[in-house]
View 1 (cartoon, rainbow, N blue to C red):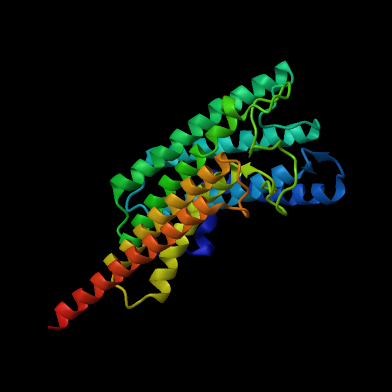
View 2 (view 1 turned 60 degrees about the vertical axis):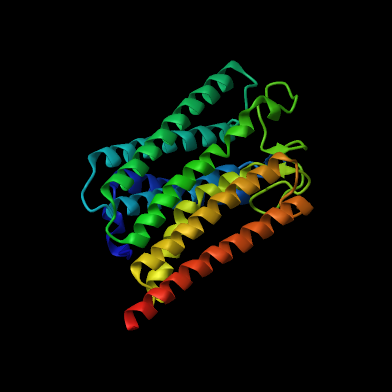
Length: 308
């Protein structure tokens, strides 16, 4: 499994055009953070479009690359990817538009216009979710030849759906902050806009549902990177063993996403876990290490059997 950067521009064209637009937006938003002194919900007003732009650059490039791994071209997957690019472009235009208006985008139902925009984006994001699911199904059906790549792409697509789902509680009634015109929140147990970690802004005084959302979404990059590293540097491992290690990592990554969301829902800051959370993390680490050891031990036994 290799990546030819020289051919990247010829991957799925709508996605790569979208990626280029997001790269430009990232630069503009970074400049906005420096030039525009406005602050919204405790953060520079251009920080949100910057974070979304960078995230979508990674998402679009990864998705376009994954489509190149399919043994045969899939028009269904390509059309789903085009739909994703269009919806994501609209979402980012909405976010930038709200910044220019000096208003929040997410959870903002303060006026009839904002309410309509919010409801429309909720529908479009749901469509994006299912378009992403379609690509995942195509990947499973078409079966990428490289076993480790197949596991990495399959787990990555699936766990990124889990990451999208981790954002759902943000808009549930339990997250109503009791502020007129605001219909949801990132933080749990505290109001949005309080003290947060640098750049990402995750709450340091309460739970933050963006953490599980972020981690789950970026399984799309983390697991393929792991598969590439195993292919490049663990050359003594056979293809099946590398694929099993990727599966172990994928399962652990999924549990971590759920664990982080569970921690946030309990109103607990990321860096201030209680004993229950620490015990759950320890159990995850021990289980993952044991599963990894079993995979490697199975490989060693197979090698001994071949020698015998």
